[in-house]
Structures are given as structure tokens and as C-alpha cells.
Length: 411
Image 1 (cartoon, rainbow, N blue to C red):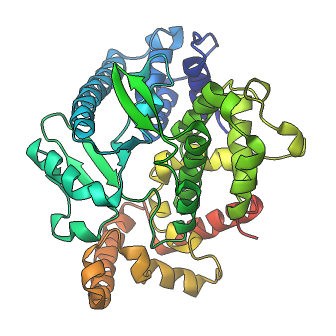
Image 2: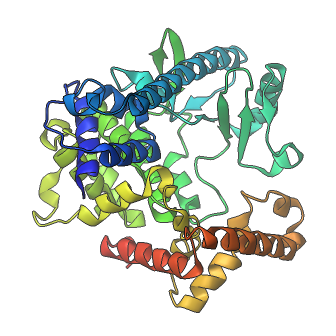
């Protein structure tokens, strides 16, 4: 981990613990730009700006750099404020219609922070009962939301809506995890989520949420899914830490580890809490974390390096865009089979991106050809820019497979 990564982790430590950044920084202009990009890739730009904006080293940089960063940070925060307000107004209408609607990310997690809108969200996620969907859909359309993939809406387990006015992007979930993927069993952990829900107040609005034990397990399962697919970001780790800090008295760690053991997630979870303890100031002892269950020599460095390089959901590295096709199908790792999985994924893998396959599965061959042509065009274009090539994709996939094996996610 280089000094840029160390500084971002220190900024997170100061943010979550309400401290002033009081360290010596010896960065030149290129290092500050690298820090800017890392903050952006991790969706932490407002937080990093808030921490470094008055630091002596930063103030020595050119006015152009400082003004660009300042404007983007302020704009991002203002957009988040508008989206949060729009969501609360919409949520009130949903609840007035007597629809059970659990909020499990976004605004619920922002409540954990003192400066909550600095922790931004790309969208808001809600969970409803399948039988409530038609009623909810009408409310959203009446409130000028546009629906994505409207032709195949009946086949989608997650339906996306956009409000052009506020910029709010809403994800409506009928299940917490896709039922046509390897993560389908995760839904068993949350079968009685509606029976056990409770409510919290956000700006005077009563919002339905999961009980803390379920919510923390969900955050871990969600992070695990992204880690196996492409990568998990610092923001997700930060959220898990802040949630653990607030609700640790209600967390049964033994039960949680029994559940994560069902998907070989024990070492993954420990990696998260090591990062929290050693880099973000959320200590083992303050959340009653069972540190004695793990070896003193446990090495989380490979995990942290993967998190820093991958960004939010692993999107910072283009080659990771194909690695999930391999890490989700880990029984074989020979090069020819890796290429086959990249170019010809299964129908189940493609259904979320191509919902037409739900109604017309015979179009799989057409989708393969379409994706193949698009891949060749993209490959030729990006090959010229040296951003991506097949060898790099294969190398990235094998590297991530090795990482999963190192932490015994794959045995």
C-alpha cells in the first residue's frame, strides 16, 4: 500500500471518528491527483475533500486543482441532499398506501454518520413483497418516475426507476439476492425479514428497516457478493464498521459466524474487521468483536490491496469486468475454459442484463453473438489505448481466483 492509499484510509479514520486530519503530508501535484482519482474511484470524494481542504500541503497546490475538487465535492453533496429529500417524500407516499417497504441501504446507512450527506449513494434500495409490486409501480409512475426495461418488468427481480427532476435512482427488490445466481441461498437468511422489521426515524419520517442482526448480515453478504464478482470498496467496509459500532450490543457474533461459515465467508469477514481496526479506528474491543477466534498472524494485506485497487464494486480496473464470469464458476481454471466463460456465460448469468431471455430463452445464441461482436469492437478500441486485452483479462481472473483461495472462500 502506497502513501496515497494510506492517506485515504486516514481520512476515513478522521471522518468516522470526527477527528481533524493532523498528519504531515509530503505530496507533489501528481500525488495529489492520484489521491483525487483514488477518492473518486472509491466514491469518497466529498469525505476526502472535507478532511484535506484546510491542510497546509493541499493549500499549496494550484488554484485550478483546488477549485475543481471543491466544486465537484460541493456539487456531489448538494445532489445527495436533493435525492435524499426526494426519497423521503416518495417513501411517505408509499407507506401512506399501506405498502410494507424495507429500506436496507442508502439513506439508512447515511444515518450512521455525523455528516451524513458526505457519504453519498448512487441509488436507494427498497425491498417489498412481490404481491405489492403492481401497487408500488402505479405510485411511482404517478409520481413521474421512469421505469427501465419496462417490456420485461414482470420477469425482473430488481426493477430500476429514475426521477429526472431530482436525479433519484430507485432500485425495487422483490428478493435481496438474485434467485438465478449462486447467491440464491443467501435469501434463506432473510425469509422472515418482514415479520421482524422495525422502524427508525429519518428527519421525522418513520422508515421500515431490518433488525440489526439481519442488517449486518445483509451488509456482509452484499459485500461478499461484490468481492467474489469484481471487488468490494472502502465505503462498504466503512458502512459495516459504523453499523457494527452503533448496534454491537444487539449483534450475536457466534450466530453471525455460523451463518457466514455456510458460504466460507469467515476469513472474508475477518479481513473487513482487521481493516476497520487497524486503519479506520473502529476497534475490535469497542464492538465486542471475537478477535480470539483468529490467529495473530492473520494476513489481510492482500484483501486490502485488492480493495484499494478495485474501487467501488471493482469498477476501477476494466479487466475486472469479466472476472466475475470466472470467480462465480470456479470448478475449472484452465485458460481455455476461462475464455469460454468470459465469451459464453450461461443463460442464468445473463438474465439480469438481458431480461428478454426470461421470456425468450432461445435467444441465448443471438445474445452470445451480440456480446461477442461488442467485445471485439471494445477490445480493438481499448487495445489501442492499452487499457485491456485478453491476456490481461485472463491474468486478472486468475489473480482474483488465487485471492479467493487464499482466504478459503474457494477450497
